[in-house]
Length: 65
Image (tube, rainbow, N blue to C red):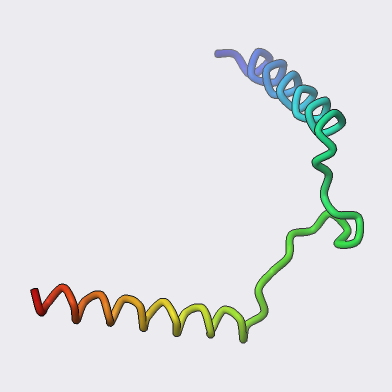
């Protein structure tokens, strides 16, 4: 596929997505400036600890059977 054809396809896809967002009302939150929310380092650590505990429990139960 030529670079020109790829550019045309990409431009058409961007236009389709723009039209979809207009009609569906799915816009990035203006309050956040269109940026994604991020977990705080404390939240990530808490999630990590909880997941490690889940895996430890799973491995213990799997080893027992």
